[in-house]
Image 1: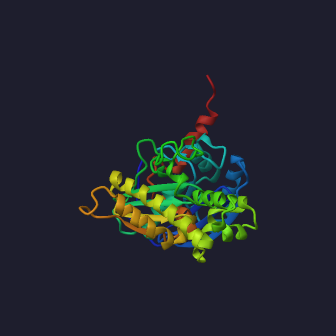
Image 2: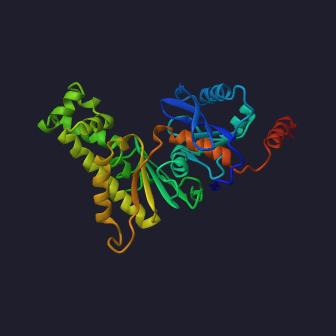
Image 3: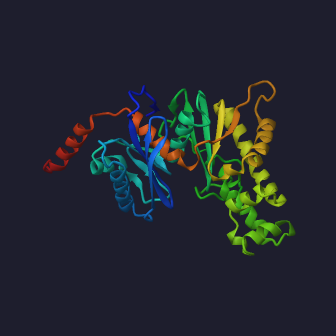
Length: 347
């Protein structure tokens, strides 16, 4: 199912967005302009899916005090089915073919919309951020791996089975670094925060004099080198860290050129933790993108922009999608049907 944004009916329309990460659950009350009016945060209670649902319920109740029932959007890492009712797989939680929407709607007694977190971020950037007004948008989130979302003509494109946008697992170096997905040479093994950290650790672990500042910042322990640390040093002017960021940017640009050959977007929006490197990342990405673009010199180029909404993009996007979703049945009818099914005697 594709989601589109129907006409809004008034400034009073609000929704709740929840972003479930590996370490925290963030929630916010969001208005129709993407502004967060109230926000809350909790630690993610481990891999226990039932406890996460309990945290979601607590957050929704706190944000709903003094208000009528508002729709809830859930953004989570993982694959959702095309209907958005079932989490096929989540890397952070023990959700495997989990009918999450039905469980939460019964628990919260309100509309719930479940979406991949990168899709939610892409929607938010298209509605309210760097991609506003763009008819063909691809959002790339550079963090632990690479996430992605596609917005075409005001519609969130999720593919035939609901799992489009897994750009990070396109194979860019056959036989290359092993990826957590089981394959080798995935794009996210070369153009993500984890990739930057790995390169920094390897350099520090080799006792290279070029890595002196990196090793000093890590307290002399190569295992403590992260992508965030290298990014911070690069922004501070460390030449070796800048070189590492440049290499990651070049891998980023190569992947973007490949995506342009297939999807021909008007704008790439680059977000996620690694995007804090700013022009240190985007300039080499743009150079490599232009050098590898199919039909270069004879076709328009996509714009490369940094995301504007920061870490709240997933929360805002999930809330907006929940508010604008088209539902199959009135909620009361849906809950009544489920209650009747539970009471029906077995044959």
